[in-house]
Image 1 (cartoon, one colour):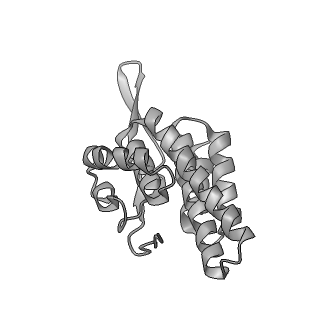
Image 2 (cartoon, helix red, strand yellow):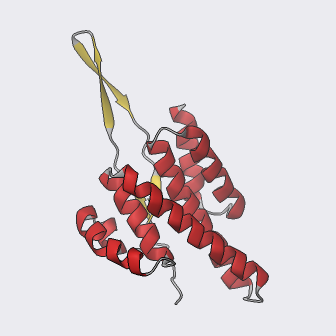
Length: 174
């Protein structure tokens, strides 16, 4: 089954949060960078994720990803839902699965005579999955691995803006 990217509505910002640091008797607010994550709005409950209904999306997507281990859109959308809901522990497995499924698809289309469009689409999927996982890794304070994901995503698909934006935000946060 083919999944197409709804280019007009795929990027959503990871909800900005602030860290309140106690400094003597006063409070100081340290801004946390806002990263861009990608959802597939038109596939596998992506509209739920995009609307911010993370609990509903997680409830609906979890059984789908358990039954269909190679469903890229479901894994990607669940990765974003877990990350945005703050459930980073569960996000790790699902984001890694989305990357693995995308890598498998990219290898398959590069070895088959699947055509230029299929190859470009598989590279785009992998770049989006890497960028999403990079956001998760940044949220987990692993800047080195986040940087590797963003840089690999840029190398795969230089025309995507999300990995570039995320890498620039990671650099500003350092």
